Length: 220
Image (cartoon, rainbow, N blue to C red):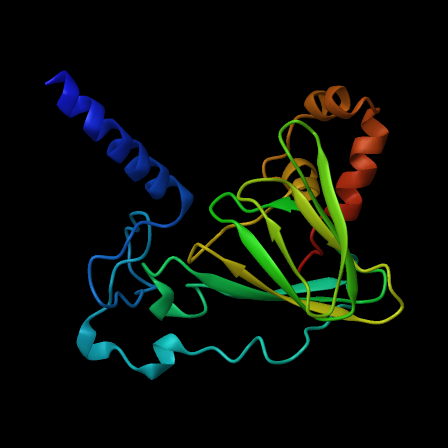
């Protein structure tokens, strides 16, 4: 019995490793997401096969550069299951990120996926931080690829004088994004002032100033 367990242990370890590094494996050919259905259990319910067509597997939104005239000077265009219902259960997605000169995709994490970027145009300073606070950083140019490990804080900054763009690939149909600044200073309800002032060693005035700058514009 003990010898059998010794043989099986590595297999259990391999299986456990597999299930935590990407979305669960699919159990059918396709499961086109019914984005209007509820409830959702670790993904979207499948819509009826009779209602499936080619548009469920198509998205043309990555072909053109997005507008970068915003505070950060960047725009992320996602091609995930919310845009391509046919990605449901397939465990992959993409994005296009455009950067104005000086633009930044600010520090953020993807809790459900590793990200790999391919530079279409321009030059970017990129980096990620390990849990030991080690910064892994590099300047990447057109044709280069860089990887950001799952769940780690990372960023991209265009320090050039020309626009830049990348295509990102993820091993999740919906990788999720948590922007560090927005998560802490623009949450609803807000993180208590005494938590932020203590964590960042600043006063309440500084916290409120940051909140004001990060608050989404009011709808007219």
